[in-house]
Image (tube, rainbow, N blue to C red; front, side, top):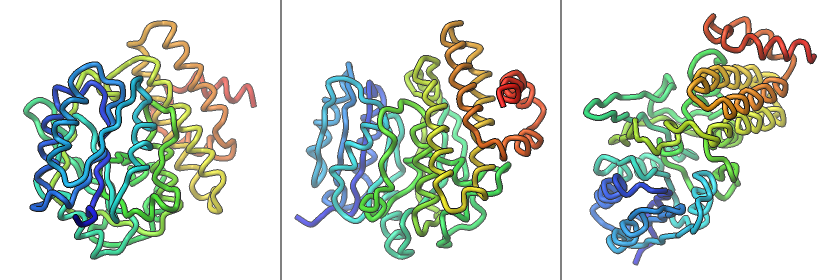
Length: 326
């Protein structure tokens, strides 16, 4: 049996209502089933997720199903999958999303043709019967460029604001060079430090067109929907981003962008926290307060001046506290 062309890393927890669709579409990526290796991680599910993974594993040329007795979190589960990558390419997919047929066939061919470290694609959000194309925020298609040249400008959406791990394909040298792992233990925003490190340290990437990945929105168990303690991890994730950028030779160039992102996300989470319990809301404010104090002093004033009015108003009290502490 030949080596697989691509390894698909599929972590999921309690995704039994959706993961059958995910797995079925993975069987339709190549005419030859040996082209795909499936690495499925059942992250402490209490439903039939693991059973569906094991049933579908028989339909792939190579497959491994890993069972975590207790949830380790998305970041750690993805890292478990990375240890089992075979072939020259790998990708991620979540248990409530799915791919159009031949997506991976197209992407593996484009990765080989372009010879770059990784590819990124648009995706389609699915909310009930409504489907919306979300374009990767990069002006050039089918052109290989340096990933760090896709980080700026600071106050417009760029590729580091498009952190979705499943929106692309990666050459295994990204893994071999230590750029594929996620910060372990993060339950949300794990892709923020990941995407920054990738764009600062990888050598080349391209945004390409391909059959779509469809991202299911509005799922009650999705980490983008829950309002519990896991949401606090975004502040830890953005602190890690600041630390990564500070170690870069061009830190002065990129720290305003990282600061902008940290403040924009802080504003969003402060608004969302209004629907949390009082105790959790206070904890969220405390984590954001600590993040704001950690931001580089030279970058904050200029970024705040360029924030829109609603964001400045939401952040006003915490920014005043930061100024008083300074």
